[in-house]
Amino acid sequence: MNIGIQADRRSFLRMAGVTALAAAGPLPTMAQAAQQDFVANSRAQAAKTPIRVTQLAANIHLLQGYGGNMAVQTGTDGKLLIDSSYMPAAPRILAALEALSKDPASTLINSHWHVDHVDGNRPMHEAGFQILAHTKTRERLSTPQTMKLLHISLPAYPRAAWPMTTFEESMTLWRNGDRIRMAHYAPAHTDTDISIHFEHANVLHVADIWFNGFYPLIDESSGGNIDGMIHASAQALTLADDQTKIIPGHGPLGTRQQLVEYHEMLATVRESVAKLKKSGVSEQEAIARKPTATLDAKWGKGGMTPDVFTGIVYRTVNV
Ligand SMILES: [Zn+2]
Ligand SMILES: [Zn+2]
Image: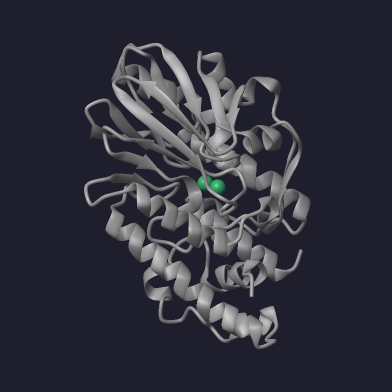
């Protein structure tokens, strides 16, 4: 394992909130140990992280724990949940749902296939939720997967964790007095990302195409790319107005204006890095030239360091 890989892992752990663990001792030197550690450490953190509940509309709440941001709509048609975090968080999530209302479990929507959004699928399914997602989410959860950037290998999930209803382009659910529109983005953060829009309540979950306030992770191993991220954030903007409560995959609840700023940041970084790549500059040299320097104070404090993010943009940009 070279130092670059260690730096990647350290920075991602920091984003995931595991600073104390990362600082507790030297990181394992084997890539194998790193991948097992990442998922195991994340699950251990999720087990002890309380679930914060924030009301967004009369019957919609935001749930935030250790994994990706979740949301639940309650009502007599049954609870509709977005994402399931890490598996050990399931008892806390189920307790939070129970405290909100006695409505039965109904539907769990996965925003995309990543472990921090789907690891709890099985216990949620066992609690009565039927799982719905993009068709490619089902494909990825039912087969072994890798995330090259984080050196993670994941086995296929058991059948109880697979979406049993899937769609390709878009889908509409009519539940609990609202119309819920789901739409697939062209490959952006992964090739499985969808937006979930509660149209009457004006609440929009945009999946991991938005890390609110930070350079985002883009998963090259499952089709992610910078041009797709720019396109997807523009697509999400067409669904929102100034009153829309926008739930990012990670980070605090956001506004349309904040999503505009993020979209513009992505486009600016893309242009700078594409110019370097087009001129024949190597990835390492492009990183060394610090093309994001003027943006780093605002966007570079998350898990994706400016250097790691520049590398992703360089590798995935279409010039
Ligand atoms: Zn995520
Ligand atoms: Zn993700």
